[in-house]
Image 1 (cartoon, rainbow, N blue to C red):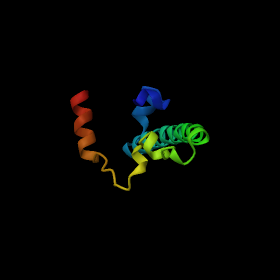
Image 2 (image 1 turned 90 degrees about the horizontal axis):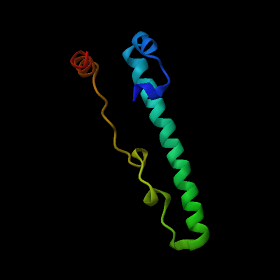
Image 3 (image 1 turned 45 degrees about the vertical axis):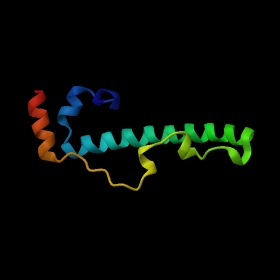
Length: 87
């Protein structure tokens, strides 16, 4: 996943833990935004054909941002343990 963020391994190595987390969150926010646009485009087509019988956009495609639940992120200590295991 980190390769898809657009950083080289050298750049990632120079980043702080907080910056890596912010980069991942920004990447996820962008993908959620793209999927939200897609589901609204799908809904618009269905609503044009089906009228009031069309499902809501949230029913067409579920996204993690649809819930009000707080997501717990990995702690810094857990991240460092995982990094040591992968090294």
